[in-house]
Image 1: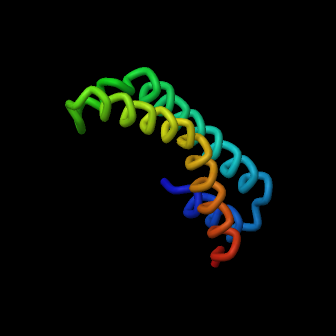
Image 2 (image 1 turned 90 degrees about the vertical axis):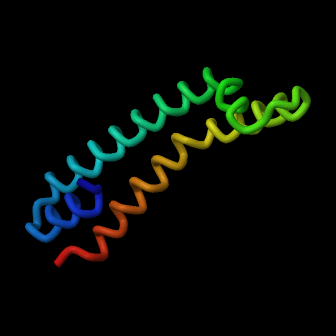
Length: 93
């Protein structure tokens, strides 16, 4: 269930403790899942890059790009979680 649905339901029920709990839990879970994906992607960078290119110089550049992008996964998770929570705060009826 998305953060916006759960948080919106709790806000609609005027349950601020439940709202804070769900917001914290969904953000923590999302951050953890994306952190695991980030680590897995960082470790498997060269295998992932080989799916797209075979030329050795391009492989090095592609692997570097994949590593740099994997560093943004946790930030993306937090952005999406907070976005859902803030969306729920405006739509709670």
